[in-house]
Image (cartoon, rainbow, N blue to C red; front, side, top):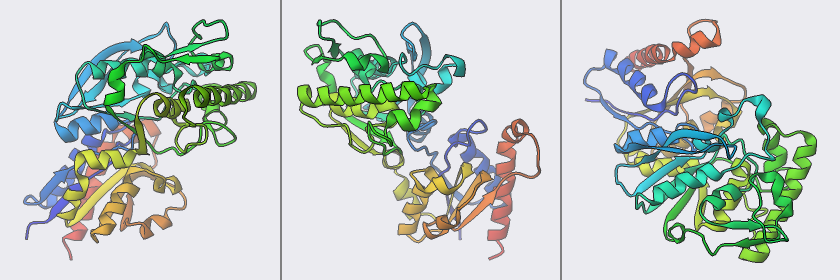
Amino acid sequence: MTKKFVLAPDSFKESMTAQEACQAMEKGIRKIDKNASITKVPMADGGEGTVDALIDATDGEKVTVTISGPFPEQKVTTYYGLLGDKKTAVIEMAKANGVDLVQPKDRNPLLTSTYGTGEMIKHALNQNVEKIIIGLGGSVTNDGGAGMAQALGVRFLDKDQKDLPFGGGALGNLASINQSNLDQRILTTEILIASDVNNPLTGPDGASHVFGPQKGATQEMIEQLDKNLTHYAAVIKKECDIDIEKTPGAGAAGGLGAGLLAFTKANLRPGIDSVVEVTHLEAAIQKADIVFTGEGGLNFQTKFGKVPYGVAQIAKKYHKPVIACAGSIGQEIESLYEDGITAVFGILTQAEPLEKALEKGPENLERTVENIVRLLNLS
């Protein structure tokens, strides 16, 4: 009887895209079972790789844009995805305003802005899309999504009715919000926020305190940014009649979650759920005999919205075995076995420099999957 495999890995960061991981897994299977039925479903969780995964899964296309980077004077040439239905765009905010776009010594969340993300949204609206999925994660900003809203026509004004400059450092001077020039198309477009972060906008668990340090914030900056976002939320509540300060997920991407909730009709959901829906992963798993998943590192954080956990949760519903492969295996993975993962395999063959291990990722994954299938064929 022909075995049916579903391959649903995340990217292996700095080693393989999710699509390349699928290809390596397929090669390993084919070496042992040339007649296997293989369905490849490259995955992501809303962060890095989401655009590529969904383009690959839907036969979509890349749309190249030149937009503002994290600093207003910085220009970035990047892309977003137009999915196979031609009605859905998928955007990773990190491609416009991500931490990798600014050298560590130059990071300053008082000044960085999400304006470029808003420009990508506007470009997608010009494609006449009906839905936009926005992946939050990896940001170098802490502006509460104000820059994104400014790109869509919202004006943030001080007490003298002058426009605020970009960046989270200016939000303390916010006196009023003028939405008369807001691009009205955003209100009739379905916006899905894909994120695995549940942090509120402000407070000890908020955007500034938890994520500020990785964006270059000193302790003094963190206090100022959190105070500014508290004020920003209060003005939004007064002027827009929406309370986003403590909403779970509002603190994602430096508060971009809050800005999207305030100025669009966005719905926030776990990133993995959006990807599962678009890729029709559940239907594929229902028909599978064996499911392979994986990512660069498996550890105790995997169960907080990461791809292998999301895949396993679906497979568990249909009593399908799930085999997870990883470049590294961390502590406290035992609970994953209760959550639907049948077995975990590391793919490294020897102790070697990280750069070399990343380079050899595809061949190591291929060989690991080959050996797993050899073992499966004994039963």
